[in-house]
Image 1: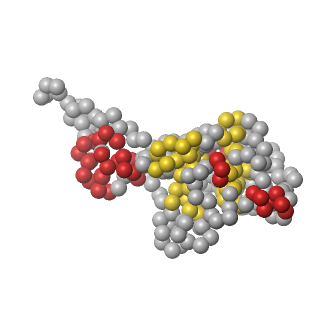
Image 2 (image 1 turned 180 degrees about the vertical axis):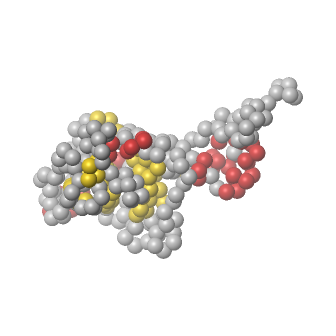
Image 3 (image 1 turned 30 degrees about the vertical axis):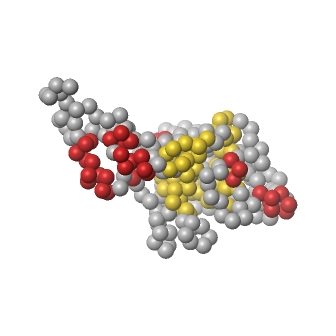
Length: 270
């Protein structure tokens, strides 16, 4: 290459930063496909294996709302409590890389499908760890309350889908690079060809609905801490398969160092 030719940027961060390869984590990509999943299957937006003796959760926030069927309409405040909707059900057998709490083999996620601008993001979620055999022995809920017209925002509703989990290597997005990598390799992001500063090669962060791995941040990272001050671990990401406004992502975290597995969540827009 002639001496006056600009250096071409690296193809990705793994070739640009050798240490980046050491940050790989195993993720299980859930790969939802439209279908008709049953309660004994892992699913996105399908029926949940719910205990009959546990009331179905409702959201009664005073400020939840929806645009209704026409987004050009003014905001419509929805009065009263509305049922939450099934979002995700994952059996341990389908995600062997995920460490379930002792005695649990079922992870469930529901949320209010209205819009909640005063919270961390557009939805209000709840997360549960369960034992499927115990639910079957005691009896599952025969019918889950469904939302009616006006009790949900279309962007926050998943299409019932079966899952085809597949393991993959997942790397942090540039927002999660350790500080020493930023400081040591920032000059490698610069290209004399651009004349405008840093040129970022693509990273190997997987943007998908997944369990484990790294969050798929598109805005600056915002890792939650538990009440004991521990930075939580990434548990799962929901993105791409639900519109969530501007194609955003919802990221769930938990702390395995504290009793009760405290959890939290974050949202950003893609």
